Length: 288
Length: 235
Image 1 (tube, chains in turn green, cyan):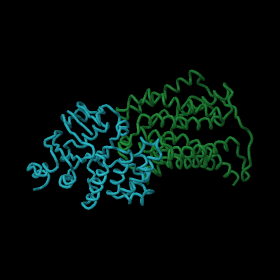
Image 2 (tube, chains in turn yellow, blue):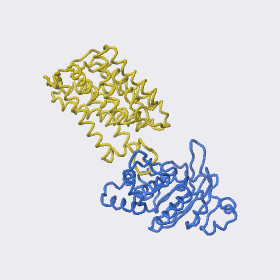
Image 3 (tube, one colour):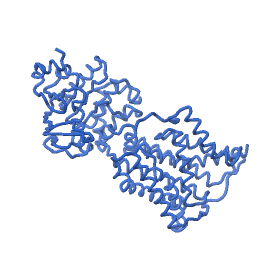
Image 4 (tube, helix red, strand yellow):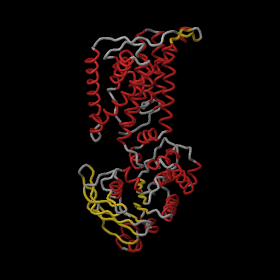
């Protein structure tokens, strides 16, 4: 039982990370209609930036994460203007190729600045608390709480603010959105900024637990794509439910079966869900 | 007032509209008749900035809006209610209406008054304001689409085939509402295949065929024109 509670806490923390990363990806997909293959690399950059702000600049942990989020949000606007906006009238394959280009570029930049080896970030908060007999580290509690707070803020932003409503409108009907006077370029920029800020927060939260390396985004990228396909492409609730489902399944399989079974569990669930509902849990059939 | 001169437009190098001249006066109801593929929707898209015309000019209240963005055109008071409605299906009726006032969102009081006017015009929408727009019947969805266009407080409303796919009784209701909107002083530019009903409520009209204006005149003249009678009125 203690082991179960312990692993459940680990699963929830991992789920929080997955959610934040997956929502960013699914938002960009919903608004711009292409998968951002550079998402994993941006996650990696977010982790390095948090490391930089914490270790080199000396900012407090939470402030360092926020600083990384701001930098990535700004980078999102720059990428949209510089790379994706000029491609807006070309087929979606061109966008995908461009995201691969961005991915290689970011990995190369990070290797140039921080080197190709592993970096360890000092854990800024130590200690553990006892929850139902299990020892849960403060870091994991911070992850869970931050993820929930960010998800609530994001929901408020999407449902209540004009910019958020504009994002939803474009996702649901591009022509309708244009005719009520929503500027698609503006919404694309806001979406990229939000998406990248979210992935930076995810990376900043996970940085003290995992080692940093230029390739750290690769496995996350794969998992996060599995999550948004499982939840339904472009669906926000899908990304949240998918994120926690996959994370808990991964942690539990790794604990009770074998370490290797953890990653296999992700794709077994994905295949099982797609066999029953090919559009994912909340997906609707759309033609693009 | 809208003055269109020599407007041409194309999709992927296929010319659809050929040097069209059309005038729609404030407060009047101008109808554009034409079969499927005659260029009605293309004309409207070129007017509201969704499609870039290849030649010609669109003037709205004396101002050249040919190169304006859709947002800029809505702000100036020209609203386009598109063919096929293009609602936000997963959002509630009220959110759809509120997004119609996207360009007026700075003025909360005005938006509230506009929302009340929409509900007065379509009381059923008030009843269903919390329901997802996509779950409504076709006629109610058309009401949401018209209401959403009115939320931008236009002086001129472009309506693209509002009767499409609706039962005759519902079509009549929609037409009654269009007359009511027009009586409030809002100019209406209406595209229809349903020539009979449209000419009954219109002030003047144009007939489009293969992207060209082939006939124009007052609604009376068009109703009595033998070519219109043969082609559209089944006389």
